[in-house]
Image (tube, rainbow, N blue to C red):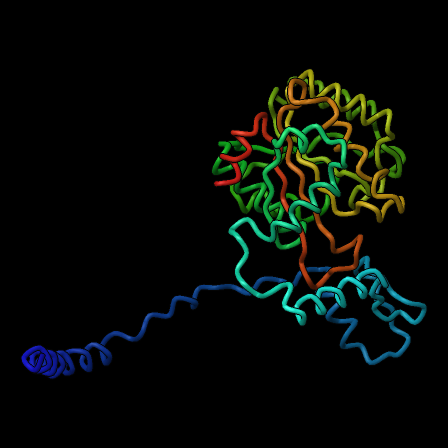
Length: 316
């Protein structure tokens, strides 16, 4: 109405001189003035240096990524075929660009958990798995950390010594305290200290019910994995001490060339059933095994002790 317009105009005339005087005496707020520069990621920083290097004989050894004989990026033929199929389905109107649900693409989630757990999975066949799409494996780890801290009330997580450099950073950023369990043999530097690992996981230093990060295959950074028989012994310890496994599965199919072989560990834990190991978490990445580095494709799966609880976890 005209009366309201007149009122706004009068208010504006009254406020203008005040705003001008304020601007003269108090400068605009600079919220970034105290921010300090963060050093570049050592791996990604080295990649950036490689890209800028004018030497035609320079070789990029910073990241593990598929390359052809000339050192150029190599895309798997299966990925090329899949992308053509996706593009064709979009062109034919079979698919679209509508929003997915909050958990992500339902078809992808169904496929990724089946890829991890296998077709004879107890947890999947009993509908005890909640899953959510993530920004590759790192995103899955952060989602797992946040869920453990915020939803489950977990304060501490145990990771191997050594472990991937970002593991501790991701968990600490979510508010979790990080401790280390025995893994690599300090004498050889190249073999698994299985006796020390068993002793540590069985000791009172690690309380019953603790969350333990396990590398599903191709342990990063050592490349040293337990054997299948050793994984069975570890599953026995987790059962006896009610430990909660969090599997980081970044190399399924890449380590041995066989996805089923590389998934043995988490499937062995799943085979024990909900009475023995009622819950576990699995973080998946498709950067390394399928060469989908830039797409950031991943997922977090959480196994609960019942269908009802899996549904509840899914909503959180």
